[in-house]
Length: 282
Image (tube, rainbow, N blue to C red; front, top):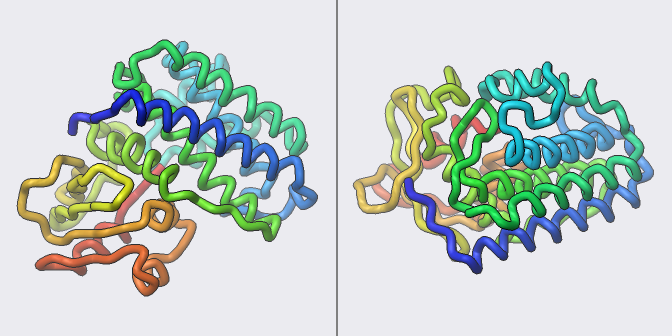
């Protein structure tokens, strides 16, 4: 699916990443419970360190895609990983970067995002770049990925601190449109591997006030994204912040449906539930 990106939306993406990073940095500087569990096996400090490493990685991918961090073991995994291998890649990277002080991690995160913004400033946002697993994505998608990481892991750290962390619809929409959709729509056979959609093929149309309408497909061993126009199994109206938290397994689908933040309709509305529940994301 061809990615459409205006100059204004490119500026909005860059500004959103900058703002979200500032919010994350402020959160870290206020963190007094860095050893509290945040997400999965990770503490708040490890979660924040991962976010900073990803910023360095995304900046490195724009400069030297075959050696983004300059660390042979991490670089090798970064360029060959599949979704199933991301946990191992993350573990290796965290061992290579052992600093866990919230203040030091905050500085590293801010520096990594600043480098990512600087390196992308004069690039064509629709120009080719290489992401994890050598997946071909446009330059803008690397910034949108970093925005998504910042929003999600800011949520994780805030949960560990018992503090609120809003996920604004406008920012989540940028991550959906410019990272998730291009990822699902690109040639990612290596990245998705055995995690590509299995079972009967399902087509679901997604629409919101903040995003570009898109049909996402899964099944038959393939995932995909395409413009609206074909017959679909279901249609979803959604609030981007709610959808991204559900898709990336931070919140459950049922409450989002019950509160009207995700609404399925069409000839087979249950197909939308099937799609969302079997969806695999980085």
